[in-house]
Length: 210
Image 1 (spheres, one colour):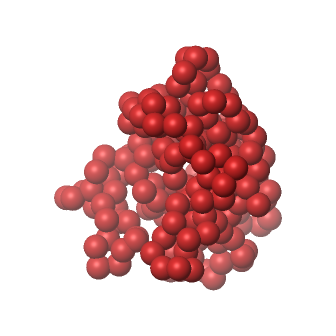
Image 2 (image 1 turned 90 degrees about the horizontal axis):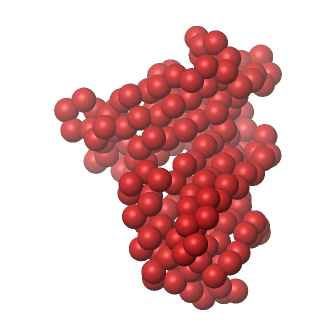
């Protein structure tokens, strides 16, 4: 089920469940996805960004080509602001509430695609802001995350790179203890942008289910 949080002539704001593709994949078994479902009631809906299949939360779609072009330009210029929450393994050495940065270059791990890796030689500059906002259980920490750049798998790779992989991440956490949950504990909680037609500042939020 895809929840439509907002719909107007220019944009759709959606709440994607974990385990659903954002766009169709390869093969007949990967055609069911968020974009295909949304395009049934909204045939003019167009993709402007994606969430990983395992990630839940807020996702934005444009309505029509003009809105798609303008929103794509806004993403490229970093004028769309997104925040996430995640549960990670361990206890980061950081004072709760204070923002910190992970500045590590990310590259495609070509022999093991779709994985990404930290690589100083071939990686693209990648920056994530993060802060501790709580704890969960004996050994998990709740983080708020803000990706400044938008690399594929950026949050997952960066958190693994600093020794705190996201709970339930079977792609990047397999070298740690076996996942203690059936899903990736990563949720897109906030998205803010200017409406492509009116220029109005819009902000939406979604509470994680973990």
